[in-house]
Length: 297
Image 1 (spheres, rainbow, N blue to C red):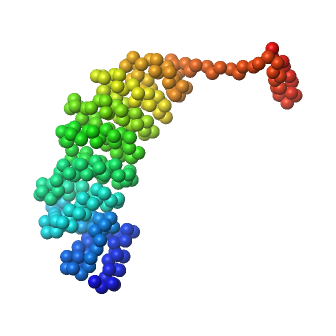
Image 2 (cartoon, rainbow, N blue to C red; image 1 turned 30 degrees about the vertical axis):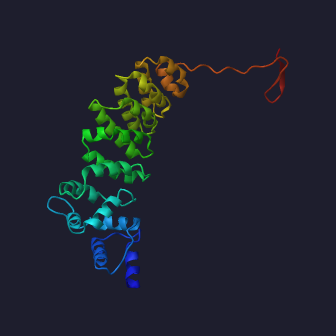
C-alpha cells in the first residue's frame, strides 16, 4: 500500500482531529478496496464511531448513515458500535438517538445494549462519558429490565461518578416501586451513596433508606449513620429523624459528635463535655508573662 496514503490516513485519524463523515466513508472504502490495511483498535473505534454517525438526518430524526452502514457493512459497523462501550471518548449523542431505530431494524440487540452499558459505567470513564451510558439505560430499561439486573446495579452505589450514582439510585427506586428490591444487598451499599457530598444525591439515598426502613428497620441503621457526618445540615437532620423512627436513639446519642453544633442544639442533643486537664500534686503552673507560680496539691 502507498506509504503516503497511510501517512495521510493516520494524520486524519489522530485523536485531536475532528472526525468528518466524508473521511470516515472514504477510509472504509479504501479498506474494502484492499488499498489500505488498518488495525481495528481503539483509535479506529474512536474515529469511525464519530465520523460515521454524523451527517445527513432522515425525516424521523435518525442519522441516515448509521442504518445504511449496518445494512451494507455489518462486520465493521458492529465492531465500531460495540467498541464504543469499551473506549473513551467514542460514544456520541447521535448513536443514542439512533438506537431505537437500530434495535427495531435488528441491527443491535436491546438486552446486550443494556448489559454493555452497565459494564461500561464500571470501566472508570469520566463522569461526562458515563452520562451517555446512564442515559441509554434510563431511556430504554423497563422496570422488569432493572429488576433482572439489580445485582449489577446495587454495587454502582459506591461509584465515584456522580452520574452513575444518580442513575443507580433512580433505577433502584424504580425497582423498589415494584416490590422486588433486594433490601439487604441495597442497604449494604447505600452508605456510600449517603456519603456523597452532593445534597441531592444524599437525599435520594435517604428516600430509598426510608422506604426500606418501613419494612426492614434493622437493615437501614448502618447506612443511615453515614448521614450524620454529611456536610449539609438537612441531610444530618433527616438522618437523625430516620434513626429515631427506627428506635435507634442510643445510636444517635453515640454519634452526636459527628453532627454540627447547630443540629445538635436543634434536636436537643448535648455533646458530652470533654474532661478538663488533671494535675498531679506538686505541679507548678506558670501563668502569663510574669511566670507567676501556683502549687497544686
